[in-house]
Length: 85
Image (cartoon, rainbow, N blue to C red):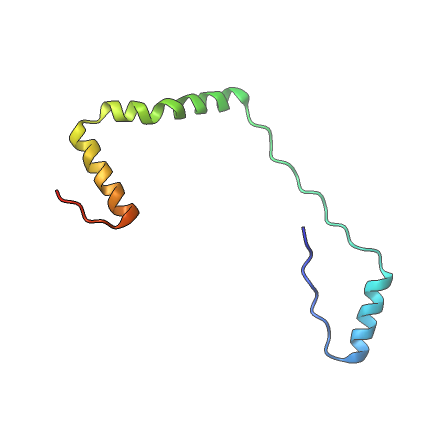
C-alpha cells in the first residue's frame, strides 16, 4: 500500500532538518495485517445449499399475480418506469 505524503514545513531550516531526518532514518515498516479466521466448511456448504435453492423455492411458492407485482416493483425501482396496474 502506498504511504501518505507528509506535509513539509514552510520554514526553510525546518524543511532542511526534515529532509535530513527522512534521509538518515531507516524506513518504518507497517505491521502485517491479520488474516481472516477460517470458516467452518460445513457451515459454508449448508449456507450455499440454502442459497442455491432459495430463489427457486420462493418463486414456486408465489402465485403468478404476486410474482408479477414483485417484478413491476423491481422494474419501477430499477428504471423509474411507470407500469400499468
